[in-house]
Length: 631
Ligand SMILES: Nc1nc2c(ncn2[C@@H]2O[C@H](COP(=O)(O)OP(=O)(O)OP(=O)(O)O)[C@@H](O)[C@H]2O)c(=O)[nH]1
Ligand SMILES: [Mg+2]
Image 1: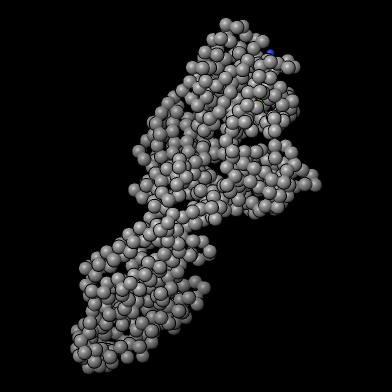
Image 2: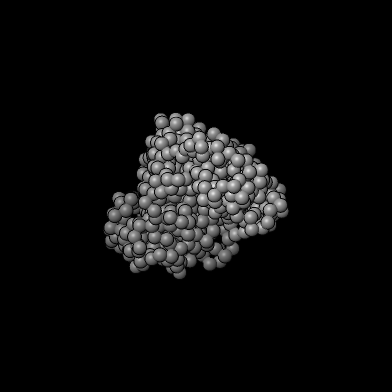
């Protein structure tokens, strides 16, 4: 069990910690000289079969950041209030931080009772009860202590009470993947880099590979101390010291995380539910600057509103925190925010999506997704998450969000799985698959209605119309199924509904055959409509009409007005594109032997049909956008 102290400066937190554990946590020279705590102190003592770990925090208002880092992951708060001084500003601020971070169990020590009379203590107890009554700490017992004397009865009673709480703690969640929030890093000569922190989930064994987040370096666990004892395994809820190989001390800092590799991804944008305290005296507006304390990390951030345009004191709303650096977080993680000057704690809340988007942050789909994450944090229901991921969810994303190993994630019945490149799997509800197929059919119908003379869109062009964000493998799979079922058909590279057809009469086919042959023979530089007119002694309008009709049946492609390419030649040009290290007008011109203008026209055609995408002067082949669609 881990207890964290809290309370105003000089109220006796460190003295009480020493009385409980026998350990003096004020070890720094400066701490001794000034008689105040500056750094977090750690002390351990046996407690029944268990070990009691005490994290002693500094009370000075300048060290709130250190305090917030210290109390993440504690089981029980020990609120220390001096009998003579009573409730003071950091009593209130620390209490507020404990509440915002979701610490639910607490006990109170009224210290320095040798400095107050009975009436004063009675009165202070009343004040403490009043202070705690609206909180989770309502009714917390108050122990009267004088920790400066040996064998103080109050301290003994407090220790007994803590031992009793230890027997009632719920089992820690070891099913989830390992996460440890680092609050200290140091090197031991001859040993390497040691990190300490509280394991928030999972377990770790000697030899395990973990990852730094942020940073991404893989590290190996050389040895473990759990609650100050050498151990083979470290578990959720314990304070651990991990000896890591693969990372230097400078790679890690307080606020870093050491996590299972599947949890390593970090983000600078975190969508959260934020509550401002009623007395914070501050209204948050778009891009308001704040300080964020998340785990043991401290960052500055700007606020992007997701619900209303402002957030007023005492209210809760969803915002995106745009942080100064990437952070590790999981849904349900608690955080505290302080004002821009870092002089007051103004609120806090719960992480919803650790990977907030940069665009379309407040679209209905996003807000519904955040709703689903809220529900998920409450009930752990993955089906609800899947139902809200209209384009499916990657298995790796589900692992990252739930922190459950892949084999423990049970996709609900009726989930369709699509293998993705790189080994990941896309999970999507079959109802969503049907809805997407309906969307494709509707989009094709609209396309035909708008362009009745067009054969139909190419595969990737249709995807851009229906859903540019969809995983390409899912798209291929949907089209595959629709083709197999006969719900859509393919002609050349065009997709169309069965009822949409452009037919050439026998007479037209006879006239078209020599035109097609000339275009094929023309290679990369086929004849224009006017040339064909001369070559085949046909009226210009007739040639143009026939070629347009052929392009509607997919037998030709119009690259620019009056210039048609045979699909075989386009296939070859598309193949040439893949051979270029960088596809630009000049390199493509050189590869094809065409003029610059024509090279550009062809590349623009490839852009238009969705084979390539132009960024600046470069045309990138769209991922997975195979030129010739093969089911
Ligand atoms: N008389 C008396 N003095 C106490 C008691 N507890 C602590 N003190 C004294 O109060 C002073 C401050 O105690 P600390 O334990 O350092 O206080 P703290 O809360 O840890 O202070 P910070 O960490 O700086 O916030 C020290 O001189 C202690 O000896 C007590 O019960 N009775
Ligand atoms: Mg102290």
